[in-house]
Image 1 (cartoon, one colour):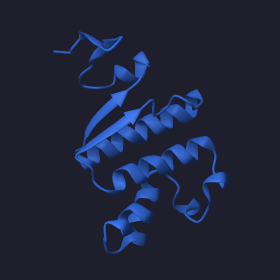
Image 2 (spheres, helix red, strand yellow):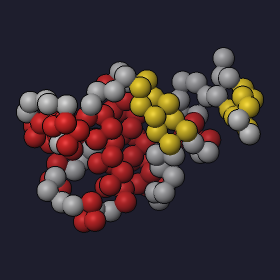
Image 3 (tube, helix red, strand yellow):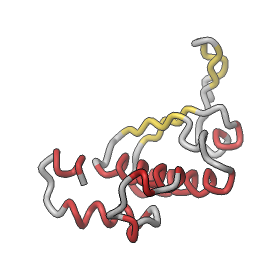
Length: 118
């Protein structure tokens, strides 16, 4: 709720619970981060990232520290929330399987563009 409160928005509790529900954590809304698993923390991060309705969202290795099953859940949520919000998503990853699910891939090596995905 904090990002929404800082923006002075109304009904922040309803909006926050709605986003937590979208990521499957509405029932855990009163838990502290230390009481959540890594995957749950990552899903809360997604809800928080989309709470301000950003035009562009940068995600740096969003599934990098997660086990395969949890990573797939977070990946699915990321793309669903992105599609629903109509946000431009810039995803930084070394995971070629994850990158292949995007509409455009730009490959970099040593700060140089190898392939601009066009």
